[in-house]
Image (cartoon, rainbow, N blue to C red):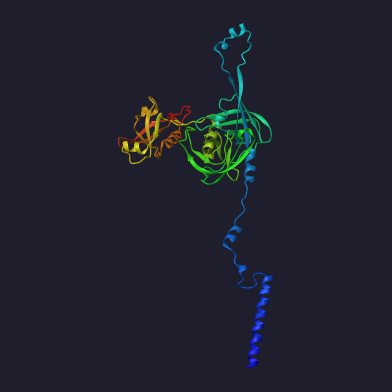
Length: 386
């Protein structure tokens, strides 16, 4: 019995010594024991370690910066004075000499090189009424520019400088943008020089803003300030997705809402200006408005799709075809009309000289009328005739 108890005591002592040795080794080599608490990794730590690093946009900026130029314009204006100052005899009698009542007024903006041989795309309002246009290239050269053509209805213009081998920007695919995409705005705000700002696309197909006659804006929160007009809005690959045009502001500074003309519209207008010096659009001589729920109710319409004709130009194409105020236009050549902006774009796309079939509702009766399309005259505001 004594021997058995002694053996048991020695066995327990050996086990304790072995356990102590293992614990000592685990301290030196963490994770040796299968149930060590050091083997437990918190979920948060795993998630944080797997987060990819945030990359910059230096490569996109480097691709597009050489294609964005600064535009400086000047025009001569007369200082208002007394009417007698316009009389040459009065000026001679009192020895007033030559009439030097003019002064130079400067403006600045931005532009985008769209071809290696010197074509530059910008906003119409940047060069409007300018007597002199100067282009500052990214390489430091300053060159005079000539106006190729302008389109006030979309606020676009094309300039040209006498130079070759310029860095033309790459155009993105039309309608490739999505809400939430990151974009960079490049221009010359406040004349401080080339500047790059970043934001996201916060809206697409913005219209009814009263900025241009034809509106289909990209909305972005990338900082756009005075002087950015005509500059480039590019994607993260440095490809042109829009021409920066306007900001929404109560103070004159950036407040996080900017608007750019999408590349699809800019390319179309640019190509027509380069080929013909102007843009040709269809016109039928009507004034329209959107169909509100109140209008739909008063006209007993099933929905708000379409555009209500509020005026018809006497002697115009629509008048000759028999279209009347109060008609509701629902389609153009079987393409549905969503609202007044949709109708404006559908009619503008019609070739002048050809006929078009307009679907309309008159006193709850659907009908179709054929009208001969004419060329749209120059108009400056969206509320004018379509």
